[in-house]
Length: 118
Image 1 (cartoon, one colour):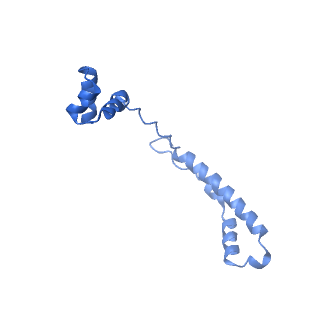
Image 2: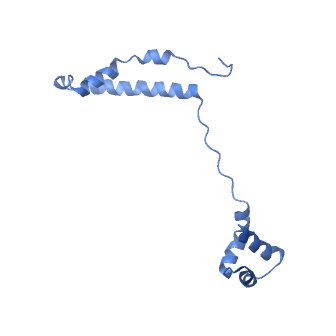
Image 3: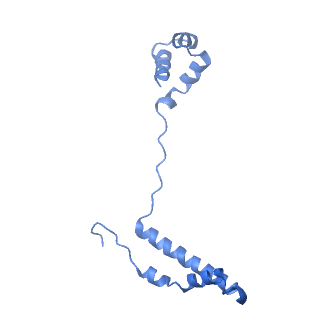
């Protein structure tokens, strides 16, 4: 960074040629030219774009419940399509356990909003 500033100072404040700057700093003339041309970008880079806003916890809770309901419906369809002979297998038992879960109990829970906003 120090050499970049020095190249820019010598080029614009002193008005030296690329060759003179290269000799005084030990930098090749093409390197001086590239640095001088990119000077404003190097000294003042663009700011990083803002990070996307993360949804609040209650919004994430609602999204999670919606996803769970969709998954449970998918697993119920899978269980219905499963042949009777394989319903007693580990896969059938796991699917039955998922279908037997009561998501309405989870959906009824309202998470706290926090900090006196309840």
